[in-house]
Picture 1 (cartoon, rainbow, N blue to C red):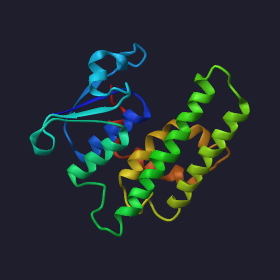
Picture 2: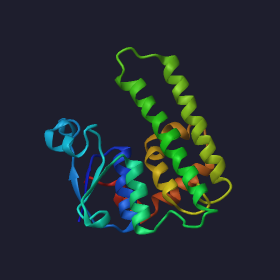
Picture 3: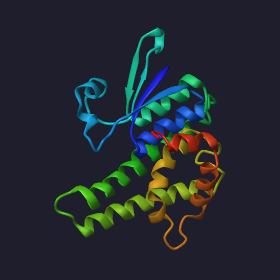
Picture 4: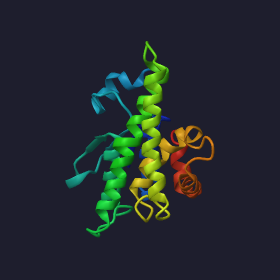
Length: 205
């Protein structure tokens, strides 16, 4: 049984969504970030960075245990081992990977930077927050453009959609001020209706 060490963060949700969507059985271990459990000796043995999520597969490649951190790596691992949501077609796969990387390297980090700028740094700057917020909106505008070409980010439901959804869900109030990004809103409603995604978003209970 795969074990998932996670918390109710966008990164954690990304991992549980893909496990649910790929139909991979797993056991949840809740990591209480408020209590600092991510810095415990036991957790740091799994991920020295002290970050969730972490996936532990006792029967990894060749039957050897495998431990993976980073939600993007977990998403790719689940897709590749299950054969789902990452097309084998060499003409289609790059488009999925391109949209997946945009979700992971553009939208997610800028959303995280906005959180830190608004809530964590000791010397807060309204100008810096505005710059980060506007950059995040630009990345989501590109997602909205792609979604105007088809139902999903890469033409079919894929790991790209699972990677983006938790960040979108967290930032939805900002993204839809003044009726902005209608394609993104339509996509989000379709994604939210998926039973597996609903289950993944509720982990850990």
